[in-house]
Length: 443
Image (tube, rainbow, N blue to C red; front, side, top):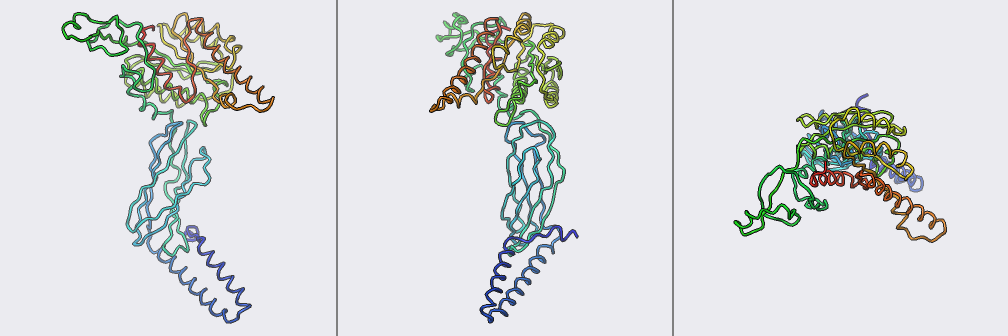
């Protein structure tokens, strides 16, 4: 029974069979062909038996293993490697069908390769998950054919392999060095003029473009015969909280990921930068109530605690309760802190409903509201209009884009900082805003 389940007839065998059927049809017209056709049938049957014999004579014809990362990074390309060892004494053709987790909805996965005798080959492909959670792989199926290519023998490996998908730790590594950079423009980040600094002296260094002229050290300049400036350290041990709105406004999709997942990925990277800058990083999420709280600390285990908490954030479609957010912050965060709020406002009416609570938070803390521009509207705005309906659509799209800028200006009126960003630029813009606040010393 096991033998029958692992044996598959290849297309080449059926092509030969169709050819023989055609010859039998011709034998009705040319009777002399009849015996020759049966001879061809005998040859095909002989080669079929020989093919079965050489493929099944070796008990362990091939060995294969699927190598996945310990955990997948959400929203990023994750490499998966298949290692195959050929134990046959001849060259084989293999067709690999990996049963990829259902979340990817890949139904036509197939890799075809040729492997020499006793050769080991590594074959790779990439997976891009778009939601957090547990991903289960099925069988790794390897169909082996000999040079005769009449049949295939199936080998199956690595059933029910589970790999969890976490927030984007690949981005975390990408932006790791930003925490140590004083020249922010090196990483594509806009250069920030330091309009203030702390009084914790660090060193005297040569002047470079962008340094504050007020920090010139004239004595050192006279000795070195070159402009020298005093460099001051940023204040440390300041509390920074990332507040993630997980209500219905964050369910909007963009390139497979929801705005909530973009916010979670950005929070992970930003928390790492904050801790590298010797500040305290904390997070919490909110919708109908405040959950997933990690209090701001800078101990060595903080990043792992934040990662595990972000992994477990569950989404819902409720209207977020900003009054509950305001009460919770007032009750639990007593020290003045930087609060980076990831949310989304589409209209001024939406902002005005929550503005009293945002103003209340901003009285005791430095509040930064991060919200998203609707990139789908750009295609409508930039499209050439030919009909009246398209003109109406373009005007409405421009109105929504303009309203986003009005929201940023309205927040600025009340001393609330804002970041209006596109989803793909969220992480970079959030890091930039945090570093700008540190450079200006306004926390």
